[in-house]
Length: 493
Image 1 (tube, one colour):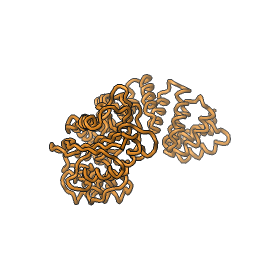
Image 2 (image 1 turned 90 degrees about the horizontal axis):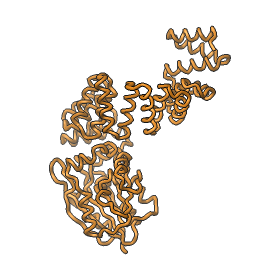
Image 3 (image 1 turned 90 degrees about the vertical axis):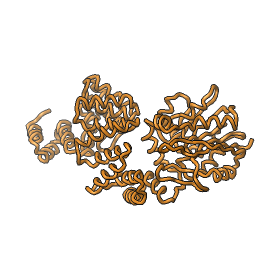
Image 4 (image 1 turned 60 degrees about the vertical axis):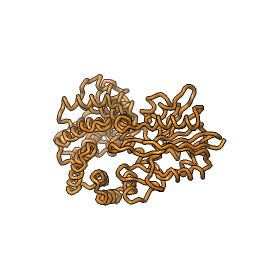
């Protein structure tokens, strides 16, 4: 209900005299809690005082559950103050109260995005677009959600339509760049990064994204120059130094790269990617499985994993390993555990009528692609060693194709795998072969190379018998074959 005092406060608000308006609204709260509180909440949102806004708006919204506008504002305040689950609940109330309110569906989509409920977010944005076809913000949010869902074949055209209609829409160019990078279209990714950077040439985040695109496009020297300029301008955070190190490695500037990674580690001591590259450059190999490094690597790689590895690098390890298993141990396995299953290439080779295949991988994006193949009974998002140690189930065959190139010390994995096999069960895997008798980590590839003789001894120490080996070419690296070994060991029957 309007009163002269409330009208006066609103006039102050409209005139931009926000301190006076806030004071006036607060003075009215004892006598007009609903109307003055509603306006105070709006003012606090304008001033980006999100937690204070939530404290005012949430009780009002709960008292008036059929007021969709209040619920939308409450959701915004909650989301921006980090209260994600309550933000989703408030937005759901808004859409229930008024399904025709566009802002309610947008609020629900944004809140669901932040809690990782991607399917609900997509549904919300699409419901909003039914009300307002072509709405720019909803269209952008829908495209971003499709990318988060790894539905790149839909996200790409959605972003492309946006940049065609609005060439100055920065986030659409960034989304289109990320989508192209995810599927391995490095030419288009760099072009899109260039278009985005042209819109805001001094933005440090855009400058780093452009430099990374240069590096992925094999323009390593240009990437080094770009990142050095970024750091010289005072934007030398951990990620900038880490990417500088990676670019310098590509240019064979090993000492400069080591110094860059050391700078990155000083700024973020917990970054496992940085620690991994420092290990490669210093020779101090980690004793633990580098879970965060592996997860980040393959989440980024998932969209173009198969096209790059199989199509461009001649990767055929799953087929070769499957043939080696049949040669050494037959084909009578009822149950199979695929360690580091990735997108499911090993299951393609081992799936058979009446056989159960389970898979485990750190990357949820890789698991999504594996799930789509329909070959697994169960898929688990977990680190391999923790998974093996965390249950008492057994499988007739445990297989790991191109997995141990990301693990420095395999003794603990071998021991855990032994416990997950029944008597007579088989354990088969591939490795990249080191040049000497010790484990190596070439900084140029970031993948571990193991010595077969050392692994043979570790397998035997765990109790494995019947250890067999076969020399193979794992993949191509800069056009040259990478030497590898297939190994199979059995638990005594």
